[in-house]
Length: 273
Image (cartoon, rainbow, N blue to C red; front, side, top):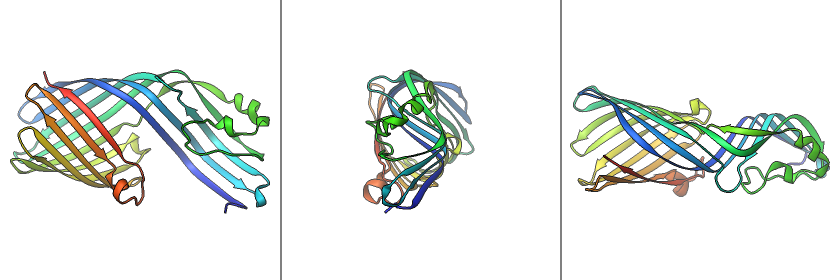
């Protein structure tokens, strides 16, 4: 019951996106102690939805007589069907081998810049009071103006601006790899997502070579946004130089949804020349 209640959110930063990415990885440095790689790829954005606000709040009056919305630096944009944009994706990693058993790594992943085709964002910075308000937050099929009383259409239209660029979250991580045996190693990792805007966290993973061509990675971690995390990854290498990857992320949400309810499957293919 939200009668005579105010619900608010500060520093809202919501982003959902789907894309296809492919590229090449080059060895930029390699000696006995240092190994560095640079990856350059192309992104094709197929879906996206972004909502940002410094402060966003809703007050519902008794008996639902009216709703007061406070939108401070609010913006909302939704991609259409098909190709929404293209962009570049850069990955860089450098490994320092301290000893035969221990290696330290620094990685920057998914540093990107994307150009959008014929996309628009609605910008609002005001407080409005009205009735007949119905909006499902995060609904991927509809946009904000479609749910608002028509008397506000002109007001909203004035805030619609062309949106040309989109930056998706990047990751910066540092890790320590310790070889337990010839076929297994422990990986201690700390990651910051989008410079902390989408959280940070750490994990401990067991990396095992089950056979000459099959590798399994099992990881448990904790993040300030995600809570407990569980990931399983499989890598299969073939004699013709291809590597196939399966990455099951967010498994804790599938089996024990405590703080997050999202899980996903990543699939990848790499060719070594």
